[in-house]
Amino acid sequence: MEFIIPLLLYCSVFVALFVTPVYAATARVLIYTATERFRHESIPIAVDVLKGRGESIDTEFDATEDASQFTDDNLSGYDALLFLSTTGEVLSSAGKAAFSKYINQGGNFVGIHSASDSLRNTTSYTRELGSIFDYHADLQNFTVDVIDRTHPSTNMLPERWNVRDEVYMFESDPRSIGATVVLAADDKSYIDNDVRRFNHGSPHPLAWYQEKGAGVVDGGIAGRSFYTSLGHLNETWRDELFVSHVLGGIGWVLQGNTTLAFNSSALVGNKPSTASSTSTTSTASSQPTTSSQDVPS
Image (tube, rainbow, N blue to C red):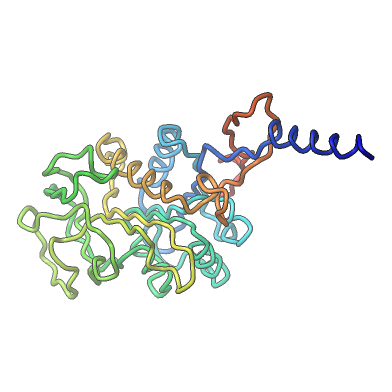
């Protein structure tokens, strides 16, 4: 007996030193591109660009248009959900419930372009995004005022950024639910012949972030949210400034420390694995993930 206890202690120390949990250095993001209304021609190139640049922000992107992927089990393996130019009612009731559960467990959210014209009657979604699209002025060149050049989504942009895109109008001011606007349209730089029905605040919001997503219910764990209304054209996704703007927003969202890629106590995200090591210093590695080709689209 006197030899057994020291042996057990030795084994415990060995396990603690040489078999350690290794947390994912790579975040996983699910790009969702389903459309029930207008479909943007730029979706395929946008997906390709994001997948091709994922390594620059230590992120693995999967892409799907399959609403059945929105289950509790599947979403729990992602550090963020990215709605890319989605339109209309792109989720079933079960999918909406899974989305709501995900963001209430610390999951992060990114919306791009017409993501704001999706799930218009789903409160958890519209609040997590920040505001809902009303209409847009005709495609044209206009000037974007960069309000906050310290945020990772804007720190590469000029103070006044000339773009060719659609100028979105919104049904409400995202600042009213706590969002911080980082890009605004210079309303003198474009032509709008329609009648604006809603007050989306001033300056005119085009991109914003939420430190704590407003789609979460009381008692939930709020992740981060980022939205940009730009991204209509194929050539937009070939523009380095725009792509850097998007990647900066995604990277910022992931650094919220509410998912498993960065926080071992989180409830959702790229799950940790257990790995053997020959030293007391862990080498970060990611859990085997579903490849882009394996995700239905």
